Amino acid sequence: MSRQRGSHGTIHTMSTTRLGPTSYLVLGMVAIRGPSTPYELKRAVRHSVGRFWPFPHAQLYAEPARLVRAGLLMETREEVGRRRRMYTITTDGREAVRAWLREPATSRMEIRDLGELKLFFSELVGPEDIVALARDQARLYREQLIELEVIEARFGTDRARARRMAPLRLGMAVYRAAAEFWDEMARNPPDHDPEPRGGA
Image (cartoon, rainbow, N blue to C red; front, side, top):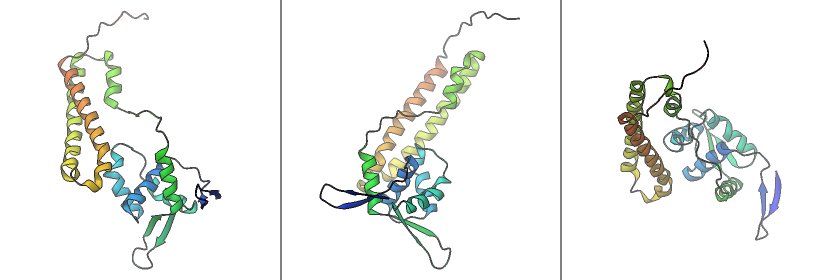
């Protein structure tokens, strides 16, 4: 830990622990939810940011303890019963996540789309296979879109959640565009005129 003087002369304890996206995810989730157990964090992530930021959820059991050692979270434990660990964000933790939020987000959206990968290699199969792939993908994206629409209908008018709901609209736009793309692919699979290849 090191100390840094703020603009108003306040001494802030700054963690020297290396923080990554999962660190800030945990800090941010505890900051907006309040005191949380690892299980509660896992459940909250699964129903929210886990839809667009997938990662091994086992990290939600290891990362809070690391952030406690860094002074960014505080841990309390039940004295009876299940003796669950409860994590609360500290002043330094809140400052760390705010500093991260103010940094520019320079990385591009990451897409790992198995259907898109198969489409790239689809010259190795016939047009009927592309149509089948496209129909399956269009159905999949529409199912995902319906899930998001249900969430929007339930929480979309809650002003307290307005900023948390904003990423949902981007997700809906992406799923809608993907479904429309695959619909078009099913109607008009790309023509392919294989070139002669050498070899025996």
